[in-house]
Amino acid sequence: MMTFGKSITINAIYRVLNVLAAFFVVILIVQIVNIEGYGILSLMIANAAVFNLITSLGADSSISYHIASSKIAPGRITGLLWTIIAFQVVVLGIVEFIVFKITGKSWVLKSDSFINVWTGFVFLLSVSITEKYSALFLGRHQFNISNRLILYCNIFMIAVFLVLYIFFKNQFNSYTVLTIYVGCSFLQAIVMALFWHLFIAWGEKTSLPRKNERKYFFTYSLVALFSNIIQFLAYRIDYWFLEYYRGEQELGWYALAVKLSQFYWLIPTVSAGIVLASYAVEKNSNEVNKMELLMRCVNGINVIASLLVFFSAGWLIPFFFGEKYFPSISLFRMLMPGYIFFCFTIILAAYFAGKNKLLVNLMGSSICLAVILVLDLWLIPSMGMKGSAIASTVGYSVSGLYSLFVYFLHRKRISNLFIPLRSDVKEISFLAKPNNTQLQ
Image (cartoon, rainbow, N blue to C red; front, side, top):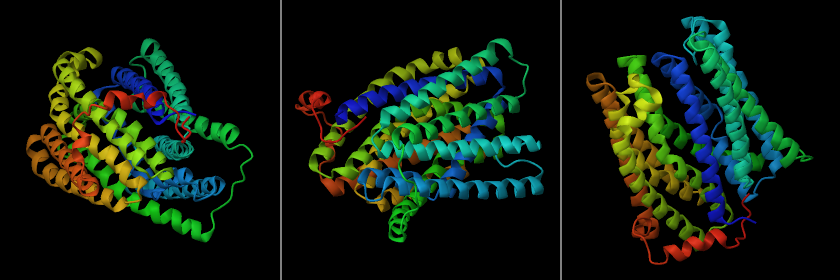
């Protein structure tokens, strides 16, 4: 048995290690390729996420919810998972073929080499497999196992790019380096799928869900799909506008600032998955109290981190990435308030999803996108990457305030998310107390 608190602590540690590992990979890639190359990498990742988000039909969120709630047999969910992956493969093949024939370039990597079409194809497949099996692990409460697997793969990726940096720097073009990155990503996807079937679900019979189960599955997933699509557009629409109006160099500077700002979402993201999986099983006041305590802890950490990082960014970014990324410093500082506000949305969205109130999240995502879209169209043509940073900060802040407002309507105790309580020190002792939910 593992308590709610211990699960968050252990998985936060793993997530920190994974983020640091991925951060080190980014540092190596930045040193190996030029700014434009990093801009292409960022665009490839954004395109892959968009494709997986749309063609998976919201299955990732639905997998975690239904595995955790045990309303559909795991083997049937696995069968549906592979059916969706097969559907994505077919759609991707059609899209890439059509785009390459019309434009002469691949959709994912914007390259005129047909080999790079396959590189983008493999990367998108890797993202799809990894996301869906991560959802399976999450629904089974096997958080630390999936995080360990990802960590091992990230360490392997570090070793690969360290060799490239030391022995083969400036010997490969950007597309070759990105192809190696894609190969490592595909390895991670295969490792997660094999581990699940060999050690977690060995002997589990795989079949398709019944008609009523499919209806129940997709009723949840399609609402999650629209919410996720809208929210992802809010995440990445600035990339496309910025690349269109200002080019890949400004995109590279901005993409690095965004990447660094996402460190603020580390603990909220880890916590959100556990909140959703736990609340899908036990919808009681104890779970809500844990979530409120968690939010107070996140707020305290963010206040301290913000003060430290705001003043140290001026030398940390040039130290790790070089003087060529000096423009990313001001962008990072401009993005900081919005990313902190959005922490409220991340955790509270998991709370609403666990209560099957997905329409709340859909409305919040729509508001966030609308604000960012309007401000992007207004500010990016004239202000470039600084206009994009302003738009994102305002949009994420509005989204956070909306989540807090709706939570207030549901609970009438919004102060519990901010103001420390005398009992907090005692409550943190839940890290050592048993819990009926098994979290591994």
